[in-house]
Length: 312
Ligand SMILES: Cc1cc2nc3c(=O)[nH]c(=O)nc-3n(C[C@H](O)[C@H](O)[C@H](O)COP(=O)(O)OP(=O)(O)OC[C@H]3O[C@@H](n4cnc5c(N)ncnc54)[C@H](O)[C@@H]3O)c2cc1C
Image (cartoon, rainbow, N blue to C red; front, side, top):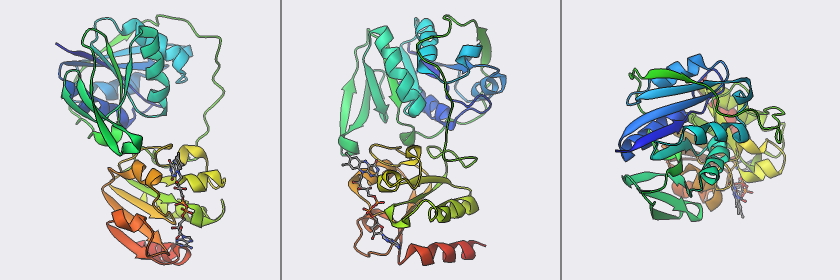
């Protein structure tokens, strides 16, 4: 029978919704599902992980050097836990994409990235060519399957579980080759771009960092996360962790606002799984209108303030 270990993503206090999405993917593989929570003072996070339905056990490893999400330290702990598990899964977020390949390399295994569908215990689908083609992957059954889960493709597993929480000692000390400097995030207190239910994104049309405040203001009114096109990132209006698309974040909000974004294929790749897409663009022939559910043709500098005032 499969035994699956999911590596929890969290900020020290709150479990990221990406973990419950990994649980849904693990459930599709079938088997026992455990969650590893690495960090320091992660009692609340472990309790949240234990409350996800379908989880068998939570393994909590607390140590000062695990507080920062540095893959050089976290990978050693996952490798030490790995024996006995058939599958090791992490989210295809920045954290998971940093950690899981290192785990795979240390185990001498290949990694399967962006698992979007599961057809059997070792059969799955993943996107390639910016999501324009889907590959069927069959992994060898005699090697631990290490993979990242394309969180945009999976619903979050429900609450209501009561998994046991086990404490474990760290297997390794701190790595001295790498040091944690700090975390800078452009999003501030706003919902996380990758898991927000509503995302408001701005493009090159905003014209400046100052004008991008319009996007933040609309997002705050809607309780939304904020994203951007690569053109807006390259122009320095916003930090690059806000980029949505092929070389940015792949997201699946219920509602996505594309404001002053043309709808280049590389941007669309990042929002293929979004629910309702609302586009605001002054060019009625902009490609974004081909995939938008609601399109508003006009100048964003008129429409967005109008929308804000209508929303009250
Ligand atoms: C390998 C590769 C990877 C890439 N990865 C990404 C990626 O991950 N994400 C990404 O976004 N891009 C990516 N790109 C870039 C992509 O091809 C486009 O260049 C980019 O998405 C364009 O951004 P934009 O829509 O903001 O700008 P533009 O294409 O310049 O579009 C601006 C839009 O704003 C509209 N507009 C202008 N003024 C107003 C106004 N006042 N009111 C309303 N509308 C207005 C215009 O009509 C236009 O449609 C990638 C490109 C390559 C080659």
